[in-house]
Image 1: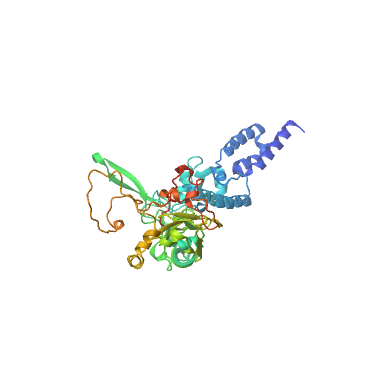
Image 2: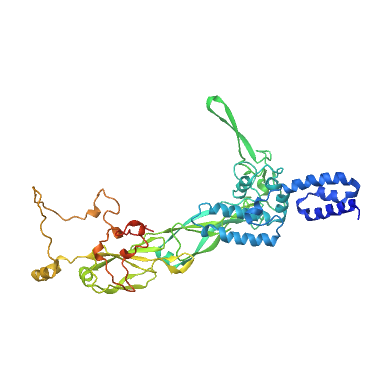
Length: 487
């Protein structure tokens, strides 16, 4: 085989492999190769190869596939990416929503053979109708995620409606047990009569006389120093499309808007362990608009404060009142009715005396962990000791009671040189305007006394003060209350 024939076969094979990256002129060049001559063909082919190699691949990179990927490979990559980077799975990433939208925009373009061919040939700017190399991702996504902005020109075929953000109120019980919520909603859908065109029958829109078909108009405004500035804004008559239907040509059902209101029934599932302000996304359930992808409906959970429990991430805190006799002699009873209706019975260790504001922790009785509902956080119990009332005090033998109780504290020694006798009156200082910090009266776990520590062990009982490994950064004798906030 001659040298010229080998080169001819090589070039033809190379053209076959790269056919999706080369334009029509290159394929025609290969077809009449012998007529044009080897030298001239090689020169033009190299020129087009350089152009093909410069084609943008950013959309492919967003999906994690190569430019030669098949439709099935692109679809599989999209589904995997959608699961991995969905905002609901990355609630701690402030950029999760943006990443997800960019990835969805890339799939919208690459899943359509026509738009993919345009992107492969001319890059991002080709999708916008311009020459190659002049536009970037920011410009494309600005079109993709807005329904016809103020920059002139109608909504892009790749535009997307803004998401509808709705607040949904829930209780702590809902977040603990999970709940399915069904609701009736009203949304904007494409008119079934005109299929979203807004026109009656085969009527076609005419060029807008206000903007002369440009989709935008120029507005003059006066600046400082008497100078005039000219700015461009979307045409208000044609909404940036450059075309407008005459009154008699408009669809009777939608009045020319292309959309009508429709009632739908939506269902959301509040999963166990979800948090306050967490988002539930119904993809594509938002309002529709001609030439624009439907937006999402996003429900933002708003948790009500609970009467008994406070939540801190996966842990719960509850305050329980016990009597003086229970604090001194112990107890074995149901202390708490949990958020799922279960009673939690606790037995104090024999000989254990509970001090005021004593606290314990019950492992595995906190909030279910999101996406792992079989695992739970911890339940912290803060005890409040109820003192006997006056009637009980009057009914007992005071002298006998004094012998049973520990002795009173002796007078201060040495005494100050000046001692004033003061009168007092009872008052609820918590309800007064007292300039103290918010936790001044609720010391919680931070001020537990060391003298209540002992070596008692029990399946249902665990002193919070003994958890040095959890709160090792706070010193040997001081253990902070969990950072609980009202829901």
